[in-house]
Image 1 (tube, each protein chain N blue to C red):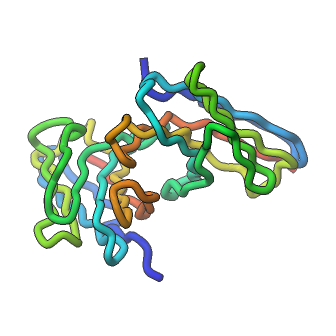
Image 2: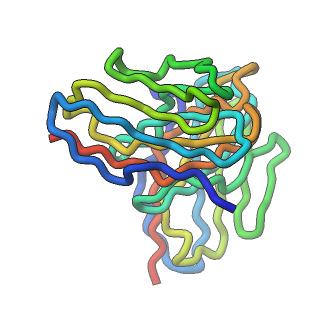
Image 3: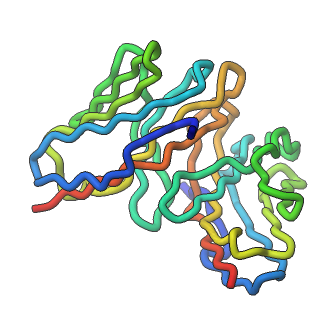
Length: 112
Length: 113
């Protein structure tokens, strides 16, 4: 079983739609959680960190459920420019700083 | 300011050749990470440096892989006797400290024929 599991998609949605991605992680010692965005043939870029209380950044909302070891990302009012692969990322444990484990990514395609 | 840079951007090697991939981190960043990203997969951790010290090399897939950062800035990932399964994008990331956000370079796409 992979340490971080994501549905690879692709998720094909029309502009303006709301779309949600989920991910599960296996390391209960993980303390830091992130969503990264990766455009085709580009490097991953940090989209947002994920906090236990949930957090929002414009059209993006991230939530964490430590008990279920589950992380989600909600994108409202999808734009064409949101088309990318979204990587769920967790750190390796208590003293692992930002030693990161990446999921395989979920591909989103937003269509006109 | 300048981000993380990597060279070459593309490398084609014949099976059995040695290759060297370079990473220039953001100036002043103490931590440097190497990742391997196979097609359709997420990045997989290879190794980590804090300044010139290689503190974790648990992700290196075999003893053909070697990384160094002798002066605590530029790093080189070397792959000896390349195999087809080494074909991947090799990503370098740096962060100000061990706990800060990692910034990725554009990667080197290695193709082993």
